[in-house]
Length: 551
Image (cartoon, rainbow, N blue to C red):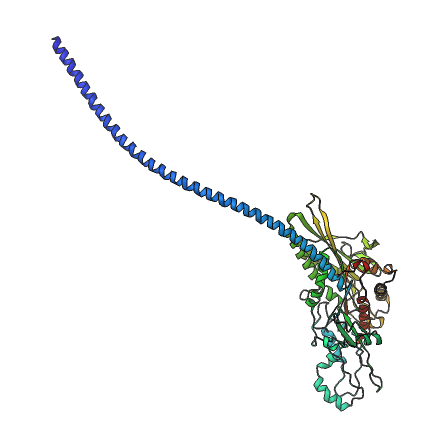
């Protein structure tokens, strides 16, 4: 019985062991399957590792190449920066040399440069000459036309028209004993050329000048001043025809030479080309003055200011100055800044007024200023940021300036306009505070026109007072020029507010441009001749001793 129990127990143990063996075999089979999967994953990971290792090596090679290129680029940038700094320094040195050479050229050209401009005929002038022109059937000799009236002036300052004869021509020198039949035969051939033939101005070329007899001509008469100087441009004035009762005409001629002469065919651009070097002198840090001189209705304001289609000297100079400001600030970065400010003064009846004051102008109260050290005290100085602001100031000047109608000019300026531009180059390289490295100043003076009372009709009242002060101040300016020409020890700058304000611009190391404007009508010949004589005086002012240049 015990043996059976033992066998049963052993049999049960065997069954249990077989079951455990079967389970163990299943587990082993499962583990082998997982092992195979793990081996496959390990193989895949090994391949991925090898791939990543290859990529890493390639990336390291790329990084090394990029680092080498970066080092080369850094070296190139350092070299480029060094070259750039060197070029900037050389540019500064060359600019200083250019400034010095430009200043010497301006000095050699003369302390006071003189331009003469004969304005073109306006439409009203032509109509007036046509009305006064004698008929073809008349036996009367040609007579001088009367002064133009207010109705013969243009409707605005900027309405100057180009003349049909660009360079002018000599007046006819025929005898006064021409028969009526001869006049009728010539009238059809002359036609529209009569008006050009009556022009008292002629502009000879170099071939018309006789350099061999230059000294003889100049010794015979002062009417040939600088005419044979080949460095000058010339103008010839012929006295208008006068009825001498059958005697020979004996018409006088005057010949002069100036720095530049502009005939009726020259436009605003031609005048600007001659004046642009002086504006550059202002940018270079010098005092420059440009003033327009001449009789009333000779085109001074048109020359200085112009209109939208034909801009004058002031708008063109403003454009050049702001272009220079942009170039300087871009070239020097934050080290340099340029400050541009403007002033606007009016000299009316020997009183200096500020046209930028809010209460100035015809509608407001009169803002009178005092003068000290050749400058106005207490006037408004406006900082301009762009050209548009300056154009607005010029428009304000035209609105507030004293302008009245006379018989000679429908829009006659009754005051001298002084427009000043300050060009200051400020350097901040020495610290936070800006220091002016150079300062230039450009004065534009649009003078009121000289006038004769009998032609302008200013016989009484305020017009007469204005005419007296205008002619007095212009006479003072002419006297100052005459004293400068003769190198007098005393220059009467204090005789007029105009000359007192322009004192620094008429002497020393300043650069001055006088633009003498003339009316082409023969009825204004005497006034034009006086203007030309003033120009001749101004052109003979020599360099100061401190301005002489060694060449």
